[in-house]
Length: 127
Picture (cartoon, rainbow, N blue to C red):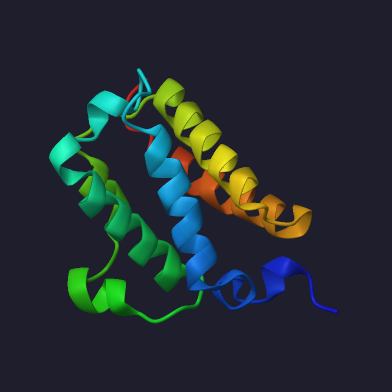
């Protein structure tokens, strides 16, 4: 049997579980003292939709994100935000709590933690 990282994570988890992870993450954001101020309250639903679209696309689902928004250009899109190591670590803490809340199995959880951790580190733009 193939390892989780060898299979499209979208095929394994499905869009509904990815949506549940994103929803669980964004339920945590508004009250967080580090991340909350980075997310305008009026755009939480938009931010959630963009993250979900990116994850669905990146994990092998329909490419709606690219059709609607073009290339992800993650560094460019996140440049207006001050993202330091503390913000990166908090984002990962809340995201992995969301993954755990949804009950993702250990192999897929490890894959998500590595992938999301790499993306979060890539987005750090200040010391």
